[in-house]
Length: 330
Image (cartoon, rainbow, N blue to C red):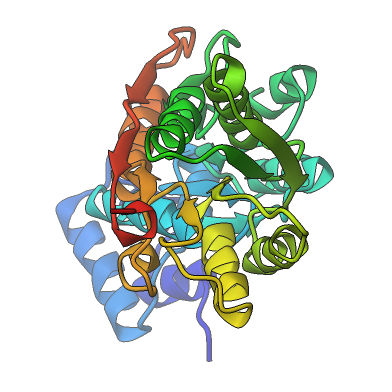
């Protein structure tokens, strides 16, 4: 049987308001009365919910975390960093999967306000700038893997354009002359920036190139790989917009008996744990997902304590090239 605050008040012989003051430590209650209330709570095994406390204090120690794809290891690692940091501060995290849909981001933002969340971390948000204005009002908000100039918004991101440039330049430096880029979702700010880096990399190079649309999922990498590698003149270097798609390309190459790195060089992006253990180990561009999640919560926590919420803070990480066997042509 689940007991309520009314049951506690009845057993302790006090009013509901007195029990509420004891729970929220708000207002005077005599020591003897407080002991009776605490004893009644223990006898009834009554635990006040964060939401119930929040109705009085407007503090629920709960935040929302909106990510675009729970199956993507990069976003999962961001979530782990966020949750570890939140738990250390006594907060609970409500995880929401937007599936790359702006309407879901808006729905979850409204839902989290209704659930009395104190703030929101949005990872890889695809919403327009005008929609973001609605999302950040009135909740304090931090964006991960997206940079925004909106007043009152904080961002944790890495320079995806520079990372795309590094990956492309590496393929060219290794002798590739026919390049392909497998892009991510067209509405993903990170995907757009990485594609810009690719285009910047090939701008001054004497190479042929093309872009094939993907969606950051393994299957799209495999399908793109099969399409490209069965042509009469296949590419000799592929930059995949993330590691999951790069792993799909490795699988496509293996099924076609194309040797990596002898016949084809492949590089990904994110440096997920899987990249080190696939065959061959995958070259990639690192961005510290766990650390980005942890820092995002720290920034949000500070923002929730700032009643003005007018300051705008940005934490930028430099992309780092991680070279492994998939581009180690000798």
